[in-house]
Each structure stands twice: as C-alpha cells, then as structure tokens.
Length: 144
Image (tube, rainbow, N blue to C red; front, top):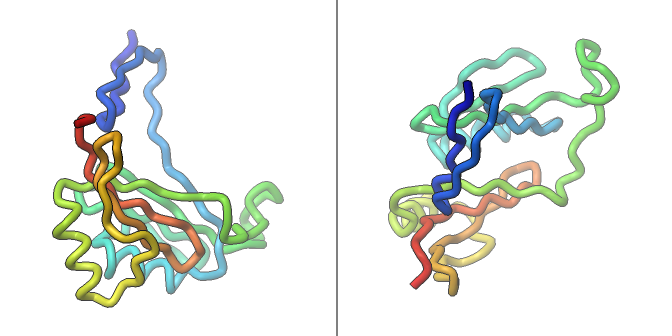
C-alpha cells in the first residue's frame, strides 16, 4: 500500500502511505524575467502558462516550480502577497557541476558563491534568480 520515497542526495528512504509530488510556488511581479531566467539560463521547459501563472519543469521533467502574479483576482488571499526576495533557496542537483559553472560564466550569469568543495563531499556554486532566490547548484558526493 505504500512506496519508498528516496532522497537521492543522501540515500535516505522512508515509507509513506500516500504518494506526493512537491511543486514550490513563488508569488512574484516578475513573471517575464523569471521565465527568461529559468528557460535561458537553466534550460527549464514550460509546462503551462497564462497571463498570471507560469509552471516550469527541469530539463529532465523530474521536478516543477511555479510562479504566480500577486493580487490576482482568481486567487484567495493566502496566495496574494508577493515574495519579498529573502529567506528562500532552491537546490538543483546536477551531474556535472563544473561544466554548468563554466557554461553559466560564459553566459555572463552572476555567480554569487564561487564553485567550491565542502568537507562533507558536495561540490557546488550559487546564483540568484530575478526574484532574489538563491539557487545552489550541486554535485553530491559521498563524504571523503
């Protein structure tokens, strides 16, 4: 009746009774800038869009993220207030973090945290999206 939910980064598994799929959503005035950033910089695809909502997927279609205009008449008050650009980050796991780092530098993307190795084995760097969200681009490795 259950299934295994795996966190591939650390090989953790846990049993759960109900399947879940997470889609983080950010309320922002910057739909056009956000669309351009995620599609042109990170290679995301467009799953759906209309005048007030944008749903994007990772290149391999394994995850999605959505963006919503604030104060839209179709939305309840809980989903009206815009994100203020602080207190949120995304982690994107990639196969070749060094190649992505070089590619983004060539594209002129501002690198907020230079590429580095962590004592726990991760190799990563960080950029920032138009909404102020920090994006940690990482290759997970076992602790050395």
